[in-house]
Length: 167
Image 1 (tube, rainbow, N blue to C red):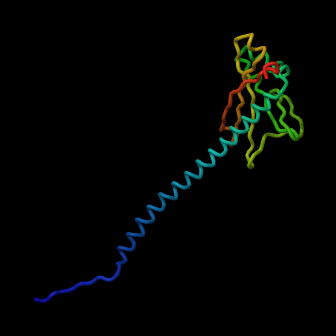
Image 2 (spheres, one colour; image 1 turned 45 degrees about the horizontal axis):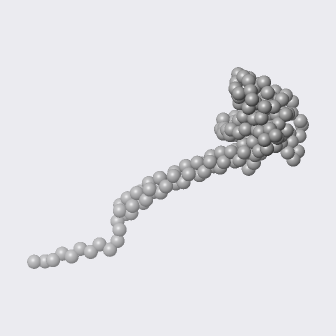
Image 3 (tube, rainbow, N blue to C red; image 1 turned 135 degrees about the horizontal axis):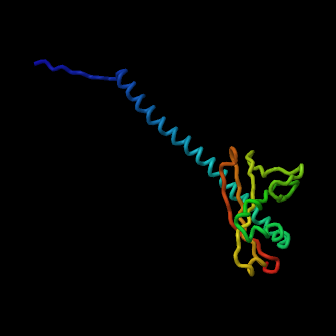
């Protein structure tokens, strides 16, 4: 009886092509994951910056004279329908912030807040307050920051401006 001995010392072309195909499918799925992670990271970075802008604006508003802010936002504290009529816009003018009444002309040197080549548009809304006694000392506001194409991305932060008598 003859014994036939077969010894394969190598890989056929078909096996090599099959291995490369499987490897490329796996690698393509990983690259899609990294692309999505990068896009998600960019979106979160912009939202974090917008939240920090809103915090800074809220701190700026808290430092403003209470009497002036109450005068500016006063009528809107009584009626929520007027809320959008009192959506003050905040701009960076020179070295500091300045807020303007809606639909009023801004100073020539004023521009939206820009961070990392992204413009952030800020609006400050007064919130309704029913209790007249609290209106003497508190003004609830919402700071809304929008960015992106057509300002479709937004984030908002609520806060309260307190009278100097309580600070």
